[in-house]
Image (cartoon, rainbow, N blue to C red):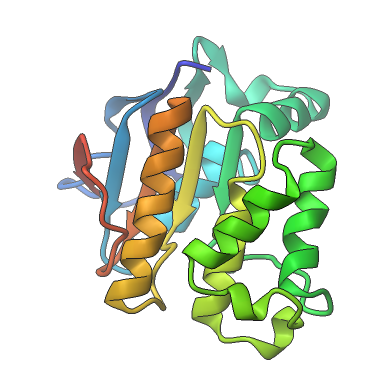
Length: 214
């Protein structure tokens, strides 16, 4: 996939009073592979909704989301499954980790489905993210900031054209946010995927090509 295009997209909940100052809603905009995007928003402006629309988990919007030139709303469940395995990844704000599994087991579980990384890469990612000592800790027993880094490692265990990240460093200090940004940028540069990150304040430091205000 080379681009994602929004054509007049607006959450249905905003239909009665569309925001006039949004750089995303109701606009025609495109996200290109290989580019880095930051979508800044105040709370309640729909940043999580945007990620859900791009990932196909919600369709409660007007307008169109196009993957290249194909309407995402018309994709079959099988087509969505293929896209999510081979092209489109997401790091959810709520993370969606399995709390009873260890940090390492959560990442390995994703990697078994894709076969994209080897064990050395996974362990190195934990080291670089500053959570090597949490490899065998149940996710339920580690902090949310540590969980965010587990989710990041897991999110990079697949082929990507676009990586969606909904407030990925909201609970990280400056040093660990920097570590996360370095890993994301290295992988995006090496393989050419695009990043679309959202933020209501603290954001992952990347050399963004475009900053949009929701």
